[in-house]
Image (cartoon, rainbow, N blue to C red; front, top):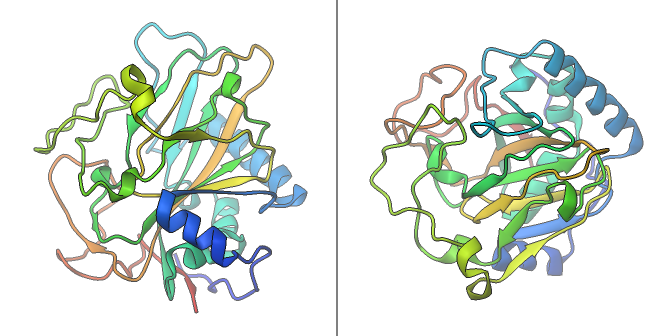
Length: 275
């Protein structure tokens, strides 16, 4: 995936307080990062992908669930318009600021859509155990393409959980797949909510959240009968990230051709921003 790196100045420069919030809490909400033109284009690209998904699409609906929970990954390798969002959009520069990184690799981008009256929740998990990557500099950008509220499935985050010094076993979103890595299970957060500092954000189209790869998060169903919850997601890695293949991880688009411990720089995990 060869393309010019993002060189334009970011539309939003993080303040020292925002960077400190990301580092301390593992979650940061930033308003109106992607403008109306980006939102219109990305909504059209999501519709295009849903009509003709890539080979990476899989069923993530709970057994017997109502509605439809759609997910597709590595979409910038499937539809060229998403590639522009990766290389020309504002996300990579913001991730670099939050992680205080001098370069940013894209791990993959993703679509997650909960259509109206979708009863499947997003189970509590953190991202890093799914991926063949080591290092602290790993984050997820979650862009709202619709108005998002608790009723429509706003993501919840456990503040500070990225600094617990503990990885938890990956939770499968595919009813027919299970992960086997020897890690403890995710704690019962919903059953003990008072024990955790949980935060969520009502989002407007164009708002984003940035969360650390070890920040625990989950989301309720979309109970709205009249509102989809469309999200476009970019997964980024910073300076200290390296390739860490392990068995039974989330499927990648293809073998990146790297050895364990190598920098991520390759066609599958391209450098998309550099200071």
